[in-house]
Image (cartoon, rainbow, N blue to C red; front, side):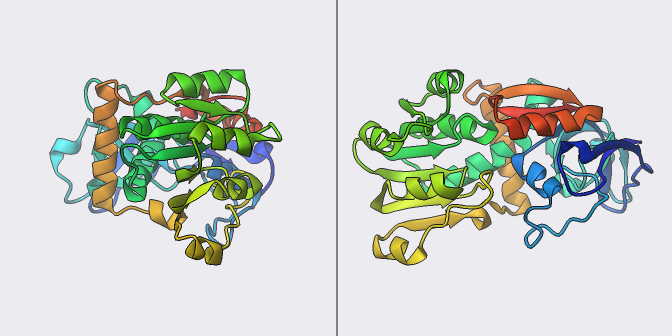
Length: 320
């Protein structure tokens, strides 16, 4: 089958098309003919050699985790009803024509939802929905969202607004600002402005009850300073190169509840529930996955370059 290998740690150019053996589903597994592969910023970081203490990958490997597609073969013990069904799943190595997944980890894609938006929701829909639940966003909360124009950020804007929160989004440039405003943000602040924290505080009407930090680094740390005493701060993203270096002692002193990457690790049951919920909301047009560009599998290098360039809004997806 066709796949894409990370041949060595480095830039997007290390993503190279390759022919690899077809995977074979084992007991309790299915073989998925992949239609689209999800991409997330973390995959570009792993490709560069970042985060090996947390994610011990070694080249050569097929990157990626989320897929949408059609079940084409069954392993022993899997019900025949799965054959031919449109599904999404998390797999090991999604940048490929075929992928193996456990049957109990599949989520059925509704008839009224195309496989492209399903792929855009398979990771970010779960993370955005699950984190919004765990942080406990509710009516009247003042919420500050970092990285609001990205694949997950655009979903968080919509989900927090739907929960009755007052949403302030950070987004760079006119196009990204217009998008997140259209998706429901009450106010948008450009973090490239030197006085952005003052502008954000003004837009929030004070401090933030909830900060959803999908960026990390210094920007995330500055956002932590905007968190109200007794508030909630989620440091779940690190495209800046590291998570926000929040002082846990200061958080404890100010009674701020901290959330992190460990809070977006979900059980198989929760994964299916959160994915199904995202699909239902998308079919009902209450949740809109924003797809910035679709690249062919063989040009995964261009997809990674686009992700790292940060000029696109929303998701980058690979078409297989």
